[in-house]
Length: 328
Image 1: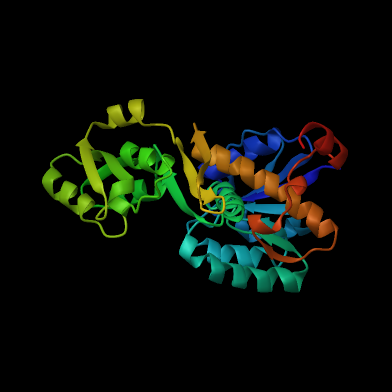
Image 2: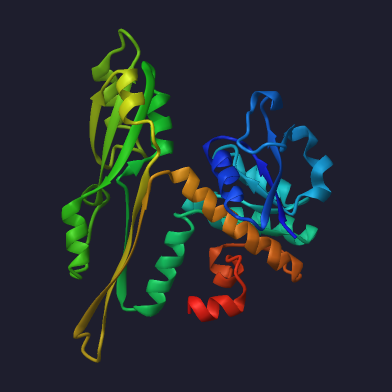
């Protein structure tokens, strides 16, 4: 029997989930729910109906897992607890500092309704989180480092587009190579935010806009650019579409540590991702955890979970015998 998937929201991430479902033969896309006019969306999959969010409960008995793809970091704290009342749910909430309070709100809702809700699924938080935990457990006497990029930061790009006089923009986060080399050497350097990453911005300005003012607004923007060495390039809309249309990303999780009675042996654990499409990869992770949520709920589990709470076997469509024979 196929796992019946619903999608709430249909931007880049929603399209990625649609592609991910098509690559998983044990899944079936049942419906997409949108705040926009449903007739304005053209899906990749034939025969799947698009509904208004106002009609979401009419499909309550036909969806096993709802993957929440719409909205922003401010929407998910409202959407996920509400949807967990009616469905098993997956979200990609990625404001690290607010994950504990998001977990508490979702856990109350999902536990009361008897559903499983998996939050903060993706690659960071998500896959990177798992690797930080594994490495910390294996090398307790060590130090963690996380580097992001080179890749497009969608949130930072949006922040630039909100500046008066900006028509469009893309922002790349770039690891500093010398910092990476120092970490990989095992020397456990102390690195500031500025020493670990740089930011590079490609901006299309409105005709007649003050480019110096835009540049100053970018490089001094708190919480986004002020703590980084930031380079701003002004280009045409045609150049932006030609050279910066994709959404690549990736990064590295590295832990260095020592073993031995005198800490005489050093070790480096490194996990890396190089993603041609950030939303499509994130969607593939969401789909795997949708499988896990469905299986766990069938076994009687309920409440909120994170990637830390889910055994790897729940993610795979293959059975335990196959995993033990071919992957263990």
